[in-house]
Image (cartoon, rainbow, N blue to C red; front, top):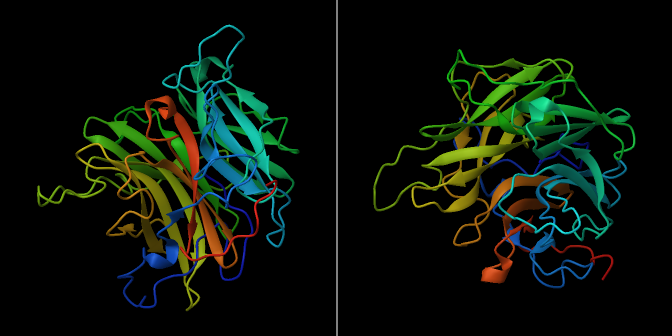
Length: 362
C-alpha cells in the first residue's frame, strides 16, 4: 500500500484517525487513535464477497493492496486498487506460491467491495525485473498516478495518466546497495508518501540473514532516490522474555507510510508494517515519529493493530481514511480450511464501532 492522497479532516495524505492525547514527549505516538482495526463482517462487504475478504480469487491470487481515491475527492466514495497477481494462461495450473508476474487493477465504488473485472496494468517484461513484479505502492501526484513496485532487481516505477496504461522507467529507481547495512540485497515492498513540501519519502523492506528490516530513502522528484541514515529505520524488536516474545521480534517489512497531524498541529509520520514473531505468527504493526525529517527514530506500538489472535497471517498493509473511520487492507490467507489456503485481501475498520455506508453492489 500503499498510497497517499488528499483525505479528510485533520489528516494530511492518507492517514488514520488522530494522535494520542499526551504528545509532549511522543510517548504514545502509535496508539489506539491509529487502530486497532477489527475485521469487516458479513453484510459490510458486497459484490458477493465473503467477509472479511474484500478481494479473493483462487486462480490469479490478487494480493498486496495499494488503494487510492478514485477521483481525488475525499468527500466521495470510490477507490482504485492495484494488486500483485498471477494471471494464468489457458491450460496452466494456478500456483499460489509462485511469485507474482503482474499488477492488476480493480475498482470498488464503496471503497471495499472490489469488482470482479480486473485490468492488467503491468507485467514482468524488463530483464532487470527477473520475471516478477508485485507489492505495488500507488499515489496520485497532479494528473499522474505513480506506481512503485518490487521486482527481482529492486524497486521500479511506472506512470499513468488514466490508471490503466502505464509507462515504466527503464531501470529500478532504487536498486541494491552493496556498501551499506543492506549487504547488497535487493530492496522490496516499497511504500511511498509525498510530504507537505512536495518531496517524497520511501520506506522499503530488506531481507537479511537476521530477518527482514525496513529502510528509508528520500527524493525531490519521486524518481531519483537517496538512502537516509546508516542503518535500518526499523529493525526487529529485541527478543526479551522467552515466555512473551515480541510480535515483531523475527522480522519487520512491507511498510506503508501515512502522514497525519496531531490535535496540537504537529506533523506525524506513521508507518504500518508487516510483523513476524519468533514462532512465525504474522500481524500488522505500527510505528511513528513526529515530523518527517528522518532524524528521529520510529516509536513502535506495544501491540499489533490488526491480525492479533488470528492464524491467517496478515501482512502487506494499506490504509485509507474516510473522515470518522479508516479502512485497512492486508494480505492474508483466504480462510482457515485447506481449500482456502491461498492469499486474499482482508479489510478492517477503525474505530471498531464505526458505521460504514451500505456496501455497493449488495
